[in-house]
Amino acid sequence: MNIADENKTLANPQGESEMGARKFGHEMKRSRRALSVINQNLAGSQPYPCVVNKRPNTQKCVIYNENIANPVQRPITRKFAAQIAPSQNQQPCPSGTKKVDSSIQNSREDEDVKILDEECKTVADLPVPMSLEKPKAEPNQTIQTSEVEMEDIFEEAILDIDGRDAKNPLAVTEYVDDLYSYYRRMEATSCVSPDYMSQQFDINEKMRAILIDWLVEVHYKFELRDETLFLTVNLIDRFLARYTVVRKKLQLVGLIAMLLACKYEEVSVPVVDDLIFISDKAYTRQDLLEMERIMLNALQFNMSFPTPYVFLRRFLKAAESDKKLELLSFYLIELSLVEYEMLKFPPSLLAAAAVYTAQSTLYGFNQWNKTCEFYTQYSESHLLKCSRLMATFHQKAGTGKLTGVHRKYSTSKFGYTAKIGPADFLIKSSSQL
Image (cartoon, rainbow, N blue to C red; front, side, top):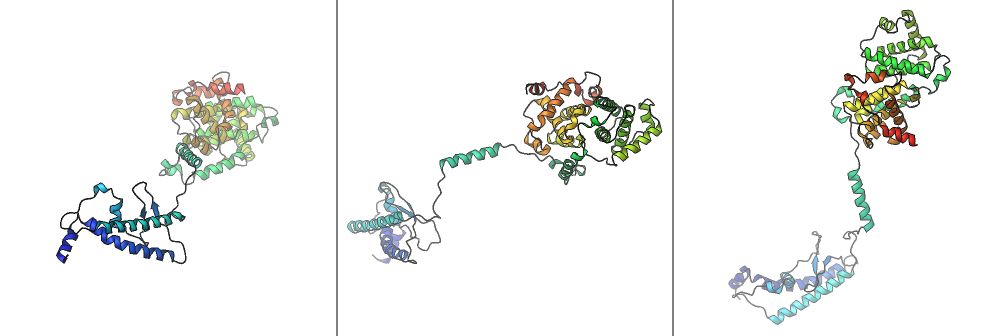
């Protein structure tokens, strides 16, 4: 065949498979023998196995080398590709191409298949390297992993309650956590003994309750801040725990405690003459000034102590409260201020229990979420005892002689909060224990 015929044959796309199979099949046979010898003599080690994909029936094996940078990579020849393809898809050789003798072609195909079988057998017997092995997960391990993932998906998230106030300088979001950590450490020193009344010889806990109930009305008439009322009660208890007072001076102690709280919290402070007037002139100006001096010395001028108010504001923010929940929480905690037996609870617990009881009253159980538990540091089980007492005070509010808090929260200014019914299920659960 001359050069022109040969170029014509190579340019024919249909004759390319059979002629190329003869040429490249011959070269593949020599290259395989040489490469197998090289592969076995590399540093005296076993030949590096290729990834083998065995196919049933008509295919012997297909060798894939996934390492592109491997210089020992063998190309799949057109003859081998034609062998694994179905016979019915083969096109007949067109005229003008030179046909190969069938006996020579069949013998060469048998030799190539024999060589491939031997190499596939050798590769299959070798262990697969660790880099190509795929670890098989145990069935139990797979199920456990899926369960953990589902738990992570449905786990309740803790909200960042300070994120939305990042641009508000009054919220002091940079060190608000440090502030409340300090309040937690200081509230232990601000608490008084729950049985300090045993040291008083002329007054008792009922007189204390009458005094605070009256001060709630005075606080409401003067339109003072909420912080002032809580600090007033704190000063009264701390003073009575250190100083013995006669019965006729107890109202004077309450007036001076409110005066000091106003000086600490308010912008506009009531004058001494106003305090003399609301006491029905039972005390003189000199009596008030003398009691102020005695109280400040007894308290050693320590006025800055955390009250339930500072914790209540923080916990209401964690509970994402609305106005109704906020008013009910303040109503419950002011009812607790009157009761002497609530002194056994720290201020943070009182605030958390007020929010929990208000949630239970308005919405029922299961309202104490992970966010409330995180910021209050109290779980639902820690709050139940105090919450049941608050629900009892709520049930009895408006009855008896001490109705100052109930009348205050029965006005439109406080949204008629006192008309909300108590959480009876909390009271029933406490009676069953």
